[in-house]
Length: 137
Image 1 (cartoon, rainbow, N blue to C red):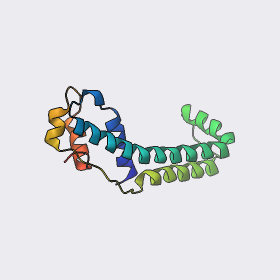
Image 2 (image 1 turned 180 degrees about the horizontal axis):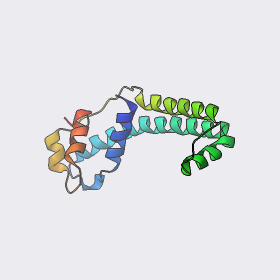
Image 3 (image 1 turned 90 degrees about the vertical axis):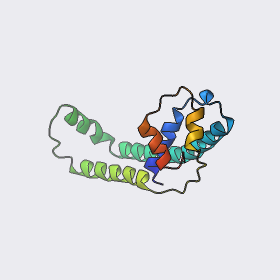
Image 4 (image 1 turned 120 degrees about the vertical axis):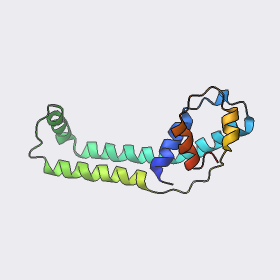
């Protein structure tokens, strides 16, 4: 599974109010899946932050100037090295979230999920996304 999907699933599960789910098995399974996915998402986010911090440290002198040019809608002239390094950093960040990881989820049956979910506000799209990616079966 791509880390971008893992990240989105972890984010989606983090918004579920676990105390509103009366079924203990559904609750335990969702907690297990969340903790498992969060580990991968957190590691990817830490790698992303490290790349950003490294880029900012390496390019601090030009960073403020380029940001000021952008904020004022001015052309960015004379900063070719910076722009190339920025593009490379963005590609490196994107490659982190495009990488694949092996996930071992414990899916919850859709009927059990829906019958025990209570008052939570989830959309059809969110439920379909969880089903398509192994949280629900």
